[in-house]
Image 1 (cartoon, rainbow, N blue to C red):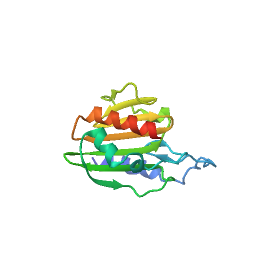
Image 2 (cartoon, rainbow, N blue to C red):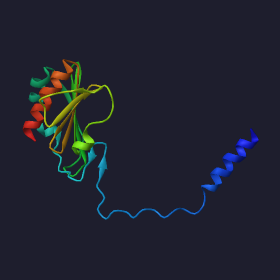
Image 3 (cartoon, rainbow, N blue to C red):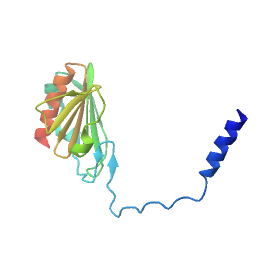
Image 4 (cartoon, helix red, strand yellow):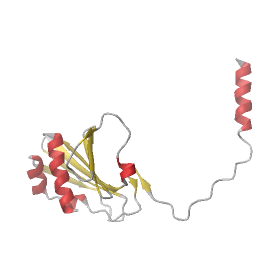
Length: 158
């Protein structure tokens, strides 16, 4: 066993030599977020896209509180959350590309007829509309149909 410790120590020390030259840094790096490429900010405030009345009509639940992100249009992502009697609605907006939009995780349910691409996963409806990724989380009612109605309303107002 001591021999393996010695071999591991020697291998670790061998890797501690002078650092290798790093690759040159690109002069115009793209900003990255959990939503993929975000070089194009200009993301609207989701709380301004839907009124309390709109949310009640789309989800059939009364709004009890609105939680805003407080960010400005230059932020790489934006969100708004509406606390509701017996549930909640949250919308997250960010920029992405078609290549970065769809994860390679199994179990995602494709949703047809929304934006350029859409899928439902772990309670979230993800929609790609141009370079905008819309993430709708609706809990407390008929979750996927509620999320679809909300996504359609958001797309119409972007």
